[in-house]
Image 1 (cartoon, rainbow over the protein chains, first blue to last red):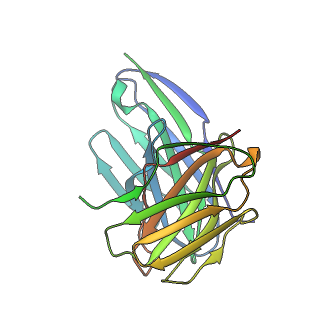
Image 2: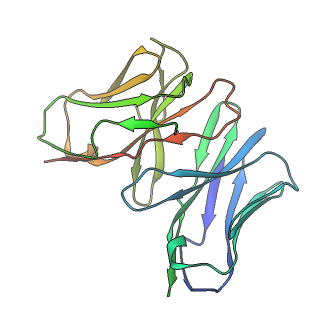
Image 3: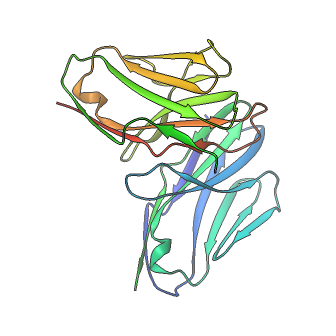
Length: 108
Length: 113
């Protein structure tokens, strides 16, 4: 069964404490892996698309990487404004599969 | 700035009412989607459309219908609202070809009482 699993469910970091969020997937025929940021009460905001193993994308303090079975979202020296839920989605064929997200809290 | 606009941020409706959720995109995207998002369950696909007047059922279509009379507008209809349809509803769109991530609207928080 095609599936996307994110871990941890919740993560609390001190400001400046770097960490990684994980998205593992079991789909065949991966066409793309997407990371989104979602603030409370709002729609998800697109961050990155990764298409093939070994690919990396960066934006400010965020860096996304992709292997054949998982993706990591690395957060370097996070700030309180990075607090949000981070969603991972995988496209296989014409289907999109979403994980349930990691809720990140960065404490000043 | 390209956008997906959902007509209401918050709605409160009574059980049994017919509810319309509207979504408009200004990006000339072919594909449009309706999801609901619930804690612990993530995003679940209700309906989607790849073209005007075309619709396809997603994973949880029961109790919902959709309408796409114009390319830019995709409406979700709750035929007879029930309390278990209380949720956050998200509209999204993508260009044709589907190698692109979704652009989401800001969501409609629907409460059915």
